Image (tube, rainbow, N blue to C red; front, side):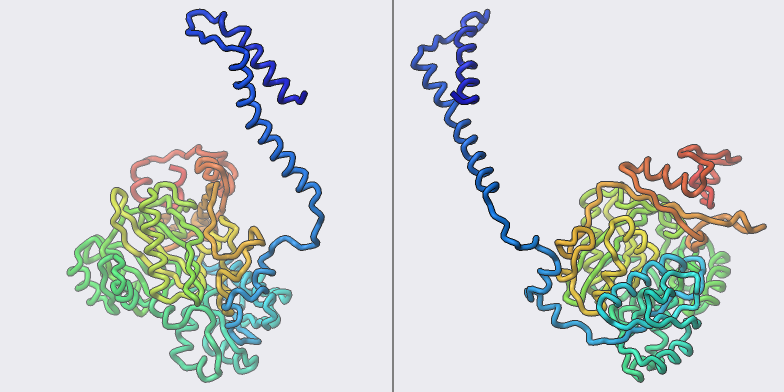
Length: 511
C-alpha cells in the first residue's frame, strides 16, 4: 500500500472512530460502503495529481540536451524579424561635442552621458572624435574616443576640427546646454550643410523649438497641452508690459540658458525691472509667465526612436515645491505622492509632447502639478541629456545615454537589448521596488557675503544619491553622505525656524 493510501485510510478510520463521540454535534452515521465510496473519492484526485507530477518529472529527467542556447537579444536581432536594423544611418566617423569646462549645472553629469555615447559608437565600429577642453573627465581618455581635441567648444574651433577630420555626423545632445547652443548657432551659419555633416538624433529644428520659449509655447498649444500663461520678450520695457498683462507675481525664465541662469520671481515692477535687466545680459530672450510657486514639481525621462516607439523610463518628484530649481531641490524617484490617475495623466502628456516635437533619443519633461487637483502645466522640455538623465540612469539601471546614442545611429528600441536582463529588448519601462533620493551639495560657506537663498537659479555644485526600501531609509542615507556629522533626521538649531522654511536656503534640509 502506498503512502497516500495509508494516510487516507488512517484518516478515515480516525474519523469513523471519533466522530460519534463529539458532544453537542449532529452526527450522521456512515456505513462501511459509504466510507469506501468516500475513501475512493478522496483518493482518486490525489493519486491522479501524484501520477501527473511523477510523469512530468520523469519526462523532464529523460529529456536529452539539444545543444541549443537560451534565447538572447542578439539572436533576436540577427533573425531579421526587425526591419529597423536595415535602416541604420550611414556614418563612418562622428564628432561628439563635450560640455566644456566645469561650471554650476554642467559638470560630471555630462561626462557620464558622453562616456556612454562614446562606448555605443565604439561598439558600432564608428570612429569617434571628441571636442572637450576639460581634461578632468573620463570621456577625454583615449580608450573611449579615437581622437580627442582639447579645444574650446565654439563654432570657430569646431569648424576647424570638421575641416581636418571630415566627419559624417555630429552628436549635440550629450554635451549639455553648451553643445546644444553650439549646434543651433552652427546650423544658422550653414557649417553643417557646407561640410555635409549629419546631425544625429534630435534635429536642430526640434532643439530650437524646445529652447525658444515662444516657439515652444506655440508647439504645445497645437496639441492642447497646458502651459503657464507666458509672453516672450527681448527688452526690459516689453517685460514690464507683459507682466502688467499677466499680473503679478510672475516668474522670468531665460531661453538658451543652463541651470536656470537669469531666472527668478518678481512680486512687483521694481523687482522685475532689476531681474529682467540682469537676465537679458545673459540671454537674448526671456519668458514672462504667471507664477505657480507652491505647486508640485515633477519630471519624466522619456526615450523615443525614429520609428515613433516611445517609453517613459523614470518619473521623479521634487521634495521642494515649484520655485526651487531642480538642481537645488531634493529629488525622489519614483514619485511618492502621485495617485495612479495623476501619474498616467502626466505620462500620457509626456509621450504626446515628445512625439509632437519629434525628439529622437532621450529628453526630459518637467511639470508643475496642482497640489490638490488634476490641473497641471508644462514648465519646459530639455531635448537632450540632462542632469536628471544621469540620475535616472543610475536609479533605474537603464542606460539612457547609451540607448540615445544607439537611436541616433538609426537603431529602434525593440531591436536594442535590455541592458539589465540581456534577453529582452530596450523597449520597456523599468519598475522600481526601492526608493532613490538625491540631495544637492552646496559650497556657499566657502564664500563671504554670499546670499545663501536658493531659488530658480541653480547654486549647488554636486549631489549625492542613496537607495533604500523606504523614503526614510534612503533620505537618511543621503544625509549621511552630504554631511557625515549627521546620522539622520537630527536637524539643526535655527533662530527663526519659520523664516528658514518660508525662504529656503542651502540649510533648509536641516530644518
